Length: 96
Image 1: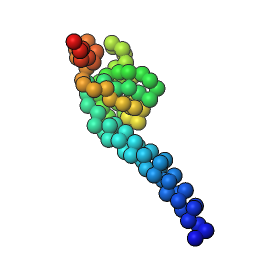
Image 2 (image 1 turned 30 degrees about the horizontal axis):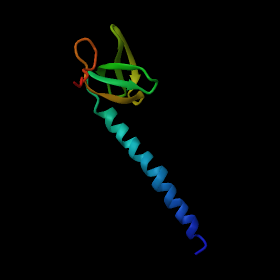
Image 3 (image 1 turned 45 degrees about the horizontal axis):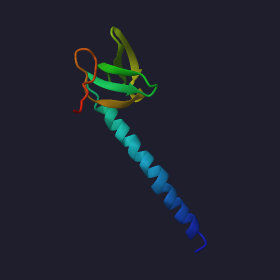
Image 4 (image 1 turned 180 degrees about the vertical axis):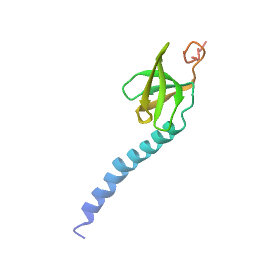
């Protein structure tokens, strides 16, 4: 019974730290695997861009008109909702 408090600490640590981190990692991998040409993305460095092309390990990202860079697929941190229009802007919803 002396190990019961230690076991409780391990279980709480797993529930509060390890499990959520594992879930976030799995979601990020799914997001990176589901990229498509034309998606507006945010890179881990904070750069915004539009997916111009895809490779197994790399993503071609247009970060400014005519400026296309290759980045590691793992550098994609988020996908903005909705594809970019012809001007490269993400459509916004205006209320009112």
